[in-house]
Length: 436
Image: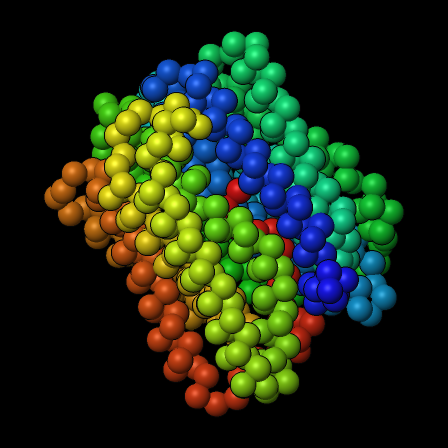
């Protein structure tokens, strides 16, 4: 029976899931050791750094990975090497990275003063972490497109394993500077890329350069959706620091709570690798019943995950953040209830967004995330206790995204779904999970 079940799992799911699992565990270990080692103010600075890195890093570089993977997969099916695609992908990532670095450098002092208690070194660490993410996501696109999922999972696993080792060493050495805990986000991804570079170099090949339009066609809208989705899920910690800079305990406690309630998102990351191809296959063949059946099953799974996570977080969340992360006792059961509801709605949005992508409706997905961020901003500006505001903003923003997607998806599936591009060109393998 076990062998039969394993045959039902799409290729690469176990390898990628194992890597994502270790990377997820690393997040908990990283923040737990830092929480026990740093002061409230320093842990708040690390929390803000963490939120910015993953908001910008995943938001702008994961779309590059997905588009590189899409084009590499299409070329691989025709026996063409991935080298020209990687060259274009690295160029795109380099341009995006340069824009981010220039913006961060230009605003170095205001960023340091408003977000890191005047510590400019943390801004330098932020730049280094963005460089590391740009390199990592570019190479992962090739590994994904060539379906080298064991190597892909290995890169994720090395990244996570190194984070655990490095922060453990920092904790044992009694390091109390947030800079060193931030540098882990620079070193671990870079080393993981170096150790998994051989398969990329062996298969890179040469050939005629890929037309820019091939890579850039859907990248703009995909980047908008990806960046806005990370804003919805990560901006709360940053807003809390901006709105209540003197409340150093709240930002660190909120990040610790978010890491706990978002455990279902790590689980969804493994399923995401096979969800989009499955939806795109049924859409391309005009199998409307199969499309809706797969969508309903996916929504059912994430609903079960989200409800389970929410109940667990409400019951033991306040105790866990104090025990695991040494977080201040500033969040209660009601706070975890709002965060759990928000995560459940966010999971719905992730599934519905995959359905829109399968139908080649990138614009509709971007519109939904834009509506969600607008709702988030509106709620954040409402006069109310700051912590409650950012929690409600996350929840209401996620609900608005999911509801908008559901409406747009319903309007677009009255007829048999048929994307406007061939399957091998429409599918963007999204095996990177989500929140890292």
